[in-house]
Every structure is written in C-alpha cells, then in structure tokens.
Amino acid sequence: MLTLQVLSGDLFLLASKNTTPYFLLNNSIAILSYGRQYIVPVMFPILVGAAFACLFLPLSPRRRRLFIDAMVVLVIFALLMLFGILNLMIFLPPSDRVLLFSQLLLFVPCLLLIWGWIYWRVDTHSVAIGRGRIFTSSTSKDEIPPPYDYFIASFTSLLTTTLDNFNGTTRFARTLIFVHGVMMWDIMALTFSRAIALASA
Image 1 (cartoon, one colour):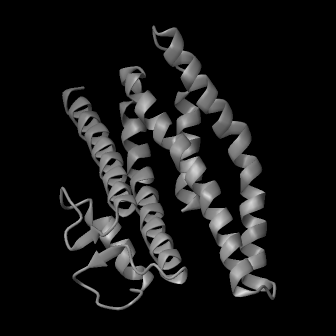
Image 2 (cartoon, rainbow, N blue to C red):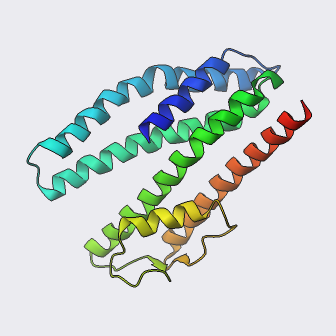
C-alpha cells in the first residue's frame, strides 16, 4: 500500500510544475505538492518504525493494535492528500493525460485496501466494546468475519454500483458505505474522463 502511494505521489510531483490560468487552483496544487514532497517523507520513517515495533517487539495486543491504528491513520492522511491531488489534476494541461491515467491505476488499489481495513477495524471495535457488529454480510455468518470478507466487500465496489451483500446496521456504518461509494464514483469518473481524453488525443 505504501509503495502504491509513493509511486502515485512521485508521478504527481512530475506534473505539479505545470500551471493553469486559475490563481486559486495553482495555489492549491502548490500546497498539496509541498505536502506530498516534504510532509509525507517525514511520515515514512514513522511508519517503518511502527511496523518494526509491531513485528519484532514484545508488545501487548492492545498496544500493537494502537500502533497499527496510528499507522493506518497516517496512511489515510496521505491517501486523502492524493485524492485531492487527483481531482485537481483534471485541470492540468492535456499533456498530462497519460500521467493522470497511470496515477489513477496506482491509486485505486490503495483506496480499496484502506476501505477494507476501515470496515474491518470499525466492526471489530464495535464488537469489542459490546455493541455487536455494525456491518452485515450475507456471505459470512461469523460473529466477527475474517478480514478477507471486508476487503472483498471493498473491492466489490469496482464491479457494482452498491456493495452487494454488505450493509450497515447503524447510521454511522451506512455513512461510511456512502462516503466509500462517493469516492469510488469520483475516481471512476476521473478515470473515464481521462480515457476519453486519451482516445480523442
């Protein structure tokens, strides 16, 4: 996941030097480019250190979960930054069509992996505090389905307009599914528009 984000972000830095006729858009691109170039690299050693601690240090299960949660929060932050970048890059000159299309192909798997983790972590936390599952799936009747089921549900969003066989039982759960759907529709629309631009170039 980190590799996909690094490659995607590096591709963006190659295109971020281009300008548009819009002052606000140029500044937004410059700010995101600065964050991707100087903030994300600082996060990388923190993620590596946390991963090393989880793998090799004798941590309690609770502390290990906290380390993993902190790592994923940082990854989500970088992911949201790239999500904003992708939407702004739609306004870059036509010469960057291939670059943007390639970046989307790297970004989508990372996005789906993150959403699979979010579903799994939120559901297991809800069970741990005694509230029971907030996501239901017709493919699994386990009290806590294995992580695989949540990642399958996330990747299913590539194939259908809704998460078939995967539903939220609370308002918060349904909101997460809605936000996931909005992000996927946004990325698919960007991919489709870039494909049209490539075909007409």
